[in-house]
Length: 559
Image (cartoon, rainbow, N blue to C red; front, side, top):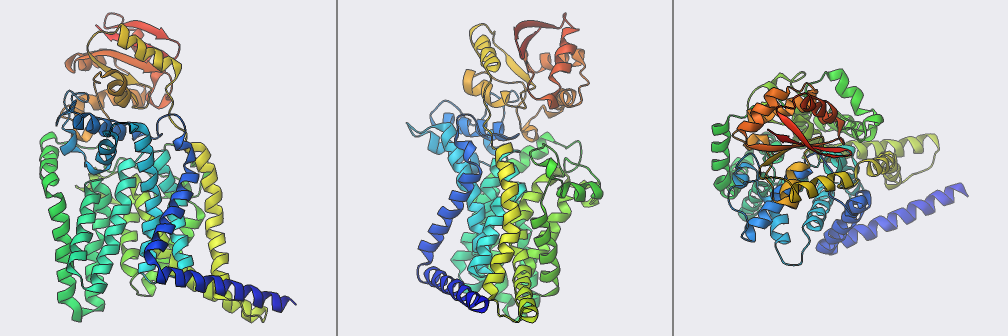
């Protein structure tokens, strides 16, 4: 009876698999559209709270909301090439890649289209596209439907990707990542089909990734020389074809980005921005490994952070299998190794201390590695499924279809990740709401405040978006110091906030130099030391006058 049940189960699974394979083969466009909707549905379920009332959460969300809003204002005739609200003048379109926030600005400039809702929808679509493009790469590398579907699910369920959406607010990376993955798909397609136009198109898509977030595109741009060397060593007779595809790919990137790269690079050289710590984060290797399995770090603004056992299992097994069994997946494994190395920070990897690596944010590289882990781990899981099938046949003396073993592995990988995802969803996808005290501060500034710029403390940078958006008022700082001429003075103020060591006299001197009129202190985010900042200003009444006390928000005028 048991033997018959196993045979029936094998038969049903086999029938379903044949029907799915036939559907995908006979109707590829419909299948990809259905899969895109599937990943959009899963992503929307995970990040469903984003669609509730309030602003999209995340440390960097104020940056991209402000840039998208200013793009909209410019298109409506109220902006310009220079943003007057940040840093006393900020060349927004040449300093930060414009495609990601530009999409929102263009759509929201259409009458009747809501700005905040547009931002949220574009963010959700881009998030889901990471799963879709990861699936497509897996299929391109000759993986079956089930395992490729697992790869896409892993990409959107993994904590590093979810944290980039809801915790860090890395909107630009979420937009750039699926574009970078799509460019790799087109590169593979150009190689297989010998199509020049596909190679140029692939390069152009990577160019759009550059124009969404240059750091993300840089990480995946490293793939081209790895891919070229791999194919040259394994197929030396195709060297002319390989170089043609590679040159056309680079041509596509260049044509798409050259108009922006030149002014961007010129601005960087002019301002001479340097990070206090190369790669932003510094930590030991022990801390990196410990954090990767520490579920208590879910929802914490800290790096290194949680990765999860399932992702680590796929990474380790996939790297060992793929690097010892050469295949078309091997270049992806090599790229994964390089990205992991960069994610380790300057204390572990001295290369991060060197320019241009010193200007990176190494925390983002855990996001970049996630879809690569999902793809590189598949050959290992496929081999594991065959091993399980063989062991069952040996021990139980019954034949088990490989597809059933594959389903078991998918459940073991995706199950715990889904549980982590439910915890993550409840912790980090909470819209940012303006408190009544903060609204009272906006009302006071709008009704009684004098002209002048505002410095926000304790709002976790949200003043950089909300002051211009609600009041049309400029702020002293901004939230992209790399493009600021006065970044050193701004850094001095930020250091006071982050350390709690507030020098009120020096703060006054800097604020006067930067035309600061008010300091708005909101006791909301202790990471910016709002209590220490307030106490320091209260001790210098000859320099700062408290003009409003609104419960958890205090407003000081710079005298």
